[in-house]
Length: 412
Ligand SMILES: *Cc1c(COP(=O)(O)O)cnc(C)c1O
Image (cartoon, rainbow, N blue to C red; front, side, top):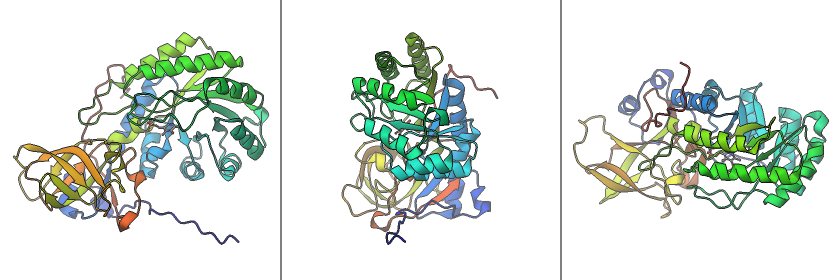
């Protein structure tokens, strides 16, 4: 027996309100009743299902949800509800979670560097057939650990490196094979692949549809250079959402660019895939903070960069905020741009914002921070003992609505 024990550092978020409270329709009603002193994570499954349905309706191919973005079971169910039937997983735990919830789902292991045991479990226990790689070494690992090939339906996807782009969160530099190497890997993988694909990620919160046009052209060159047929081009994630002062083009503009650049490649028989994360779930999550102290233009709040607000730290995202003061009429004070400090003793636990709130915001007030359904709660740590949070489902609308998208019409 192993002497090593594994332990999760962060407890899963649990619903801590009874059903009567969970059924409360709005964040304001919950705050008024519960007066939460711990960060309160609010999920809006209806908004997530709606965003997922919009993406599925508009994207000209298969849609995989990138589970890392928010693996909360309520979120996975909402994405499923919206019509998503495929999941992009990156770890053995994500694979097992999705399989336990959706026996019928397509699960795709899209991390280019996997533990051998994770490959074995995914193939042998969870019915995963598709695996990403960006090196000959990883191809060897996948073939050895699955013991499979084309006849068993093995799917192999070559991750293509992207040049450094304009995304708010650049993902170039860590994964991906350079074009010549990618072409070689396509050739090397072809005999063992029942399904062969090429994939890329242009960077997260990518605002420019042309990034996909350029990536598609590069993928086309690599496929031509390889001289072997592929079945799938996977255009990755990175689709943007709105934040204060940031209004991306509607998703339809991205889909149109992807479709046009794909058609220009003239590759009949090839299917498009996408792996959106942020675009499906950002709007469906928010966090309610409480102000514990004020110092001039700085508010000390009960969650921060070691909690659900990681992206407000070094990445410098601003999020929509609004004041909740259950016992008083709405503040009429003009808005002021505040800096937030999280609860830990680390001076890096600082969110420069600015976060625009009424100038009379004070100790005891609550603040709802919106657009946190993506890369929020899942990045929490237990640092300094601030690991408690509560989870509720609400039925009010998200703080920022997605821009109306004339390109996408949803059947009622
Ligand atoms: C993180 C990730 C995604 C999702 O990216 P978003 O920017 O959230 O859409 C998709 N695919 C891969 C391989 C990823 O690592």
